[in-house]
Image (cartoon, one colour):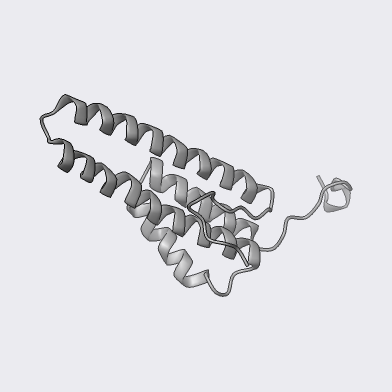
Length: 135
């Protein structure tokens, strides 16, 4: 379709939308596909563009880095604490551990999907409880 036939009702997305989408995808990849590696890429993106990116991208970058750090604490350290306090051989420890991990992980993924949908729409998003305030 030629450029002159573009949809007259279409609106352009704000500057920084692609970077915001990339940040949210990396957050989800860190939780679902490539834990650690996706976080390193997200951290590099944040260090490179965190201060110079457009406001939308800066907001999503800050949110995803903060949420990723909290996710690491909630999923790794708290699970280690549960095992340390409950004992490695106690069946109750494993029930609590699996319930906690499943609930926490699913909640973090759901927040990431909401953040991705906001980024795709060109809107800012603040992760509840985990996120940092946007500019």
